[in-house]
Image (tube, rainbow, N blue to C red):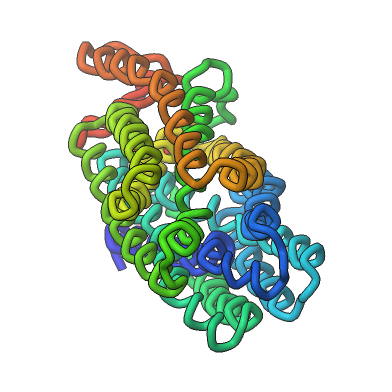
Length: 427
């Protein structure tokens, strides 16, 4: 198999691993009404249980990133996803809320390996002019996982209970672990997009200048509208709009598939323009507008609220891949795993802390208030996107000068990015 075809095969394995772990790690909010009924807990407590995997991932993402930088994706994906499957099986037989939360957190800590490993595959196997669409495909795995969860888990839970749904997740995750352990590999050193660990000295920390911090901060803020919609959207349809929970899950399943298409479109857009941050800022502005409309519509018109909720489920997830890719490109080959781990850790910290807070806000004032908080957070992210640093790097590249190596690379497809006076075809 040629390297050109092989990189897409390796990416497919990473997408598969991330998709199937996502079902169990982040698809649990579609079971929120079932969790409340079977365990007899409040909305806020049920929200904490569904976000427990984010807590586990928050603790382990950087560690998985360090291991991936040292040992590669095969070990990380094979071992982490396998342990995730085992813990999902354990969660299927647990009945106490506290114990279940602990097991789900440990499961998230193991499954975080799929988040880091999949991102490094894009950065190490693909040249800069293909990374946008490749990262879009990789990020589609999250939406595919959420779509699978929305379509599959509620019917299984209705037939076999919460335990049956979790056991189904465990079986699927075992398959992903086996495939990753058998077939994922590192790129050859002579591949243009491959890392060059054996040929270059360790790079200085990419955190010396502010652009990377701003990308992290942007992602921390825009994850708020995302988790508000994904965690409480099904409950909003059930509680505020009298929908059946299976039908509500199907709506969010369709929205997840549309969100996957939106992530692909964002990646293609960034490759065509040679930019990451410009398209990201446009998406952040769109998220602000949609969440604001949703908050108002939830107060004044039930049908408009449903339509706005479906649209928000698509728009709020469409920019994640660009922020993730931007962080990885800023990191460079020696820091990619750690920086991507840190990037997702920031998002998981915000998600885990924010879910119960939003639950309390919704309980006190209604779903519209939770959506309004999401709109405000997206608005705060708009000025943080480092668009000017990206433009300066692009102007310097066009002028033949060496741009600041810590600025967001300008990927003028089909030519490689240039940063620090050398080709950035791959980290």
